[in-house]
Amino acid sequence: MQEGEISEPFETDFGYHIIYLEKIRGQEYDVRHILLRPELTQEAIKKAKDEIDEVRAKIIDGTLTFAEAAREFSDQKRN
Image (cartoon, rainbow, N blue to C red; front, side, top):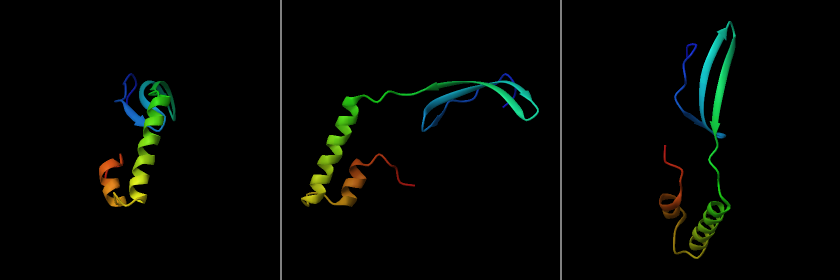
């Protein structure tokens, strides 16, 4: 980035960011930073916990295999 540029939005574990590079002085950078942290509601957390409990119960009682559950319910995408 060059002085005066604004970064593209990017995501980290902390949320979504943009950075404004104000000034470069040798190895030092003066930046401004905006961070947006999406709020997780208690309702969303409870819904996810209830769903994962239900998936586990189906695996335990044999109505669903672990592999089937992983394909159908996991948010993690295959590499």
